[in-house]
Image (spheres, rainbow, N blue to C red):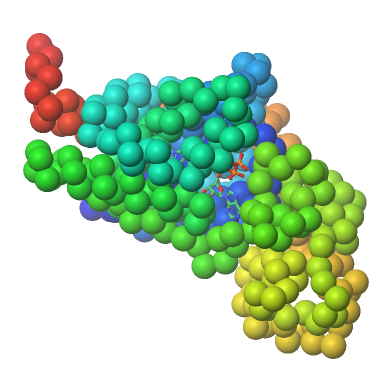
Length: 334
Ligand code: ATP
Ligand code: LTN
């Protein structure tokens, strides 16, 4: 709780080009939560360096992501939008939490296993420790809820375990957070292999729709999406490609899968894919226009970055000081 509102935290990495999966699974669901919750949305650049990055590129992408948060409809007056690296408490709390997390727990994390297989030449301690930094992000703001895609559930469970472990030793220090999974678009799959999630690090550019793709590219990717030979727009596990397209279409237009099935009854995949393409364009084009507009106003974005980082620093310091005191660090002279 912050004041009389419940708190909410989420973050995204500024690595790679954001996909439609990131938007429908995360960003889209974030908008409008600020009436109910005190919201903190971070560009988690400290997480990004667990994989080697080009510094200039990372800086550019981090700013683009922050701009995208605003373009997607997060009002920076009502939502605290900031760079993780601008707030000192993330690293400080992560260190403390490291001492309350077991190697065995981190060893079980599937993201670590996946990423270390992918980056076999750079399996660094940060990559292993990534979930503890994520726990620190969340616990610093006493977040009650954390909107994430299903793929992040394992990290959230670990965060809860760490919080409960710490609380059982020291009393109520941290709020134990709950996941908040959006109803639609929670797991958008690859357009080329619907058994894999749509991912910004996919090597095949046709597998993902990127948020900055132009309309022709979006349409082409939708038309090329892998389906099946059933020739029936049905929402069922046996037709994973079609099911995924229905998920995309319904998330873009706020319809239910049943409504979509009905709409395309008796229609072929050609018509359906075209409609999916149009639905995606109708969502992404206005978003792209708003990004272009915001990018022109450098001073405004700079002010958002500064003011919100100050707010985040202030709020997070309270939790950090409490945790430091509990574990026995000496008080700071006033
Ligand atoms: P990578 O592919 O490099 O692992 P990613 O695309 O999974 O990256 P993240 O930065 O890890 O991107 O995720 C940001 C947010 O988007 C998270 O909340 C995550 O759950 C959500 N998300 C990512 N991909 C999808 C997807 N295909 N469907 C729904 N949500 C997604
Ligand atoms: N690990 C997340 C990004 C992330 C996050 C967080 C999400 C970092 N810290 C705190 C929610 C809450 C990811 O890879 N998507």
